Image (cartoon, rainbow, N blue to C red):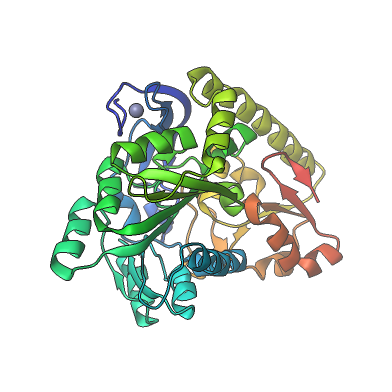
Length: 403
Ligand SMILES: [Zn+2]
């Protein structure tokens, strides 16, 4: 397998074996037998430092009928407001400016820009979700963003964006050099492209459950800089955000438009000091994750042996990875999730029926395992009455913790 950016040979360092697609929920029990599983192995490119899956699943299999609606998390909605507020100020956006959001989902982020008087346009390959966005007044093209798409946008519609924004999309696109070339094509002369993506440092902090087929890339700043540079764009600023349990937000532009912030040099230096440019650093993940698995299984076994009951909350992507890789489904009575789109369906690989959040009050499990650990605080708050009645929570990542 060769690097998707620089074509050098990549070295595999961590494998989760064959896994189902995290968003392929099953409708009926008879679908269990025909469920598809795909290899999930991560490798490192020693030349451009890009960490990537060794094999990918065609995007058509994953993104055309997506069940993730971003508006379901209140923490996420708050983040959308903060991002719009910050970027409108930082980039001096006005009613003349256009924000193009790539993978705009149900339009939650664009609504926050629109509210501040900026013109908006979304593009998202999930037809069902793009329809929802359009209905709510956020113009959304149901398509994949790539160089060809960008060129058509520019040549046929005369569209150039002052801000190109994409959250959790850069990690998802296998043909990444074509994608970044597309960004350059449709970015206005003085414009900025802003991308937010889960930061690779999380992998060293046990956050291995961000590894799934949809995430083809796991980015460090050193790798991102090489990638953007090869497409003729420069990263001029970077910051950390709390999203997805630790994300990077990068700011890129055509060369020499902005002076490069100290933040960029500082973070690059830190990454090199921490060995983000070396295969040996990545290999350490194996040992850490196997320790975490032992610890969690020990706790769940102990609880079950004591005659107590455990349920899980949050049928999110992370949860699917953790449940499958650690094999913990046999310890769980049921799983519940706020997303109506997932309720009544079976979880990929582990085949637990997804119930609405109220099921926790009906069945009163002794422990609630919080799978989306990155929003654990929000979930504990949401289940205040369960906690008052003596219910306990287990947070599995980055360290096993009982609340
Ligand atoms: Zn490479």
